[in-house]
Image 1 (spheres, rainbow, N blue to C red):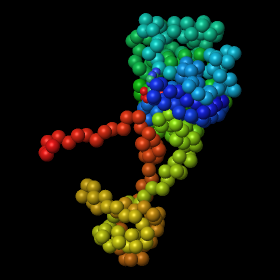
Image 2 (cartoon, helix red, strand yellow):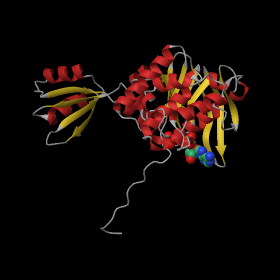
Image 3 (tube, rainbow, N blue to C red):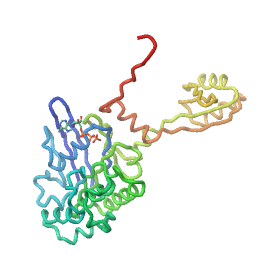
Image 4 (cartoon, rainbow, N blue to C red):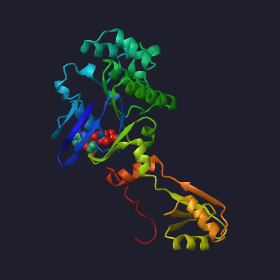
Length: 312
Ligand SMILES: Nc1ncnc2c1ncn2[C@@H]1O[C@H](COP(=O)(O)OP(=O)(O)OP(=O)(O)O)[C@@H](O)[C@H]1O
């Protein structure tokens, strides 16, 4: 289990992490989500003892990283893979880490097999694609057979098959009772993998919940309705307390209705003798919910593009 309690990290006036509290339980994949610059990597670095907190604490199975008796067997991490010397072979790199942590050499072959790199064990890392480097980084994290895994954007650079592989791997690691904390800035990516999600923005907690609950929160949705007489239909719906907008896209003039379910809209139309051509419920995607939650906290919100030409 990972416990983060009132954790803060300030760089000058930048509050990279600001009073953050959450728990990543064992036996679960916890998605750690936030837009770029939200403070995910900084939090992970503090969990791993690589950055000293300005305040608060982070603990793995009740101990700070530096107090863990055998850190590499307790926690495996994937941060960035740039640090692996390009002249080293995949197996050479893993053997070096294994020796430093007094892990048996046979683990090197085991983890190379587990990540699908056995065939390139003797190849230099400098020639590896980003996806292969990610796999090697994950192999390094698995080397000590740790009970806790901290993975920063593990699917970065992976092709669809690789993404699926990482998802399956994370789920099976959690099913074995391990704690898996995995960061991403893409909600959709987490929806199929994580049991829980911790969402942060500007270093602060925005949501700590299950994926299912997040879907429910965004379940409000709206009803898209079309028919030959949109004007009278809109008037009837408004008279019954609905909010109605017109979506005049691609030649149609659909009505977007909030405040009623599709069945209610259909029944009202029937009662007033109004023909309908289309009636669908539109639920926001998880990505929409995520954007809604984090939108105001994005580190770099796009500025409106300056108008060119015309009057200045
Ligand atoms: N060493 C540092 N010195 C100064 N500021 C830093 C340092 N490390 C991080 N920051 C700042 O702290 C904030 C959080 O950065 P962090 O890398 O933790 O975010 P993130 O959520 O991991 O983003 P990304 O998804 O882009 O990796 C950013 O504003 C960043 O510029």
